[in-house]
Image (cartoon, rainbow, N blue to C red; front, side):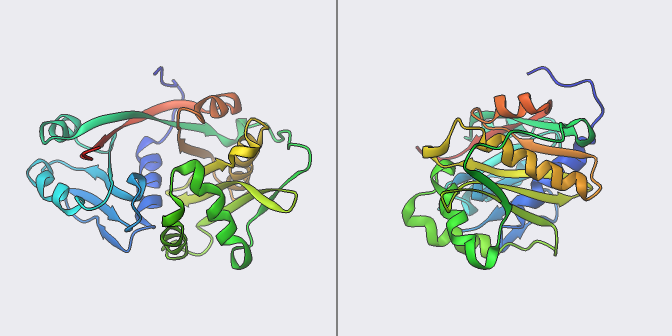
Length: 256
């Protein structure tokens, strides 16, 4: 991965990511050497470790035990101490992915993108449409149907400050077919949960939803947007102008 030569505040970007996932968790250990979050939803992105500080090595086995009953992920990036990845590997973890952390200076973002025909973008009415919005992203994210109720509960239980999280929906023929979020923290516009139903992919909906979240950040006076890119989303974000800035080592202790 070739990183950008442009200046970005990497600590603020990674702090945005940490806080986004921590806000899902009613049970968070974030004081001391390690940041652990747990939601109870059996999905690796919804339980795990977000940061290991110097001195965390000796407690890695205890944290593995804490997370043993749920799929979990260990995010090891530039906000962790330099040997953290190797220490997790030595404790029995496996490297499952390198996750690009990308960013863009919002004033360099094109002011418009093409919205697919017969599709509208909207700020979500959470009182009425949150269940349909969650249902939309469950399949692309890999949350099983049997865990929908737990996922919806986790969304409703998030601990965001007023105005910190904005949810966006793409709607076609009256149905929600795509999702994205803007999460504001550390002066950074974090873009999350960009997902499109299988029946509506390759139409530009993900691009439009990413753009909508970014423009909402710009409208709120933010200078930089950041996201963590999946392999399928990466080309979309590059086309929009996002730069590779850093990356997470994603590790797991799953038996699977």
